[in-house]
Image (cartoon, rainbow, N blue to C red; front, top):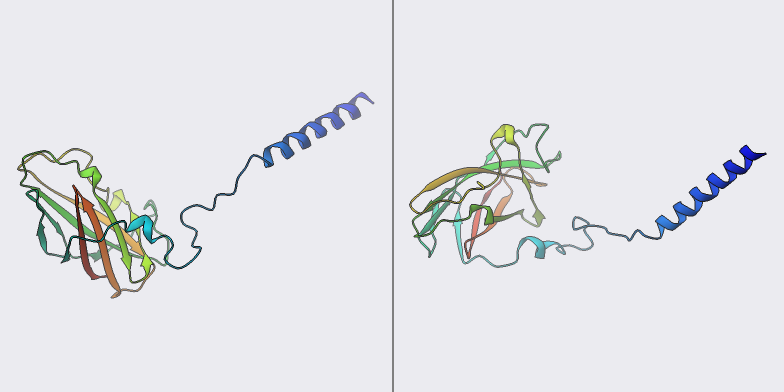
Length: 179
């Protein structure tokens, strides 16, 4: 009889605890849920570019900084690549920053948003392919750095590729095609 009472008590406590905890959760669908076409574009395109260039071209920014985005190339993400999912089209490109200004630049503040037509793309990090994001250390005045940047889009090879990069107070648009 005592064993039966303990079992009933344990089940009762479990039911009370479960019903209490389910009332605490609130529904959060996250930023990746598409509720209507274009509703997430404000997350990635806050400002219109002040200048637009093509891939492979350099742009001199007002503060003495020069930035170049190389032509994108297709790459094969490894199994450890972040954010990449088949059938996305992965591309990578080099970003070269020349600091011709008088103060150090915090490269961790570079923000890049990519899209292909009406499709938003995602950033891809893949250390095995040398895609580690922007350097964490500041770029001294008079110095140059080049790093790999990766993206993946649900699109087709040959579709348009548009980047919006904000850096040190400037917003740059870069246009080209997915490879």
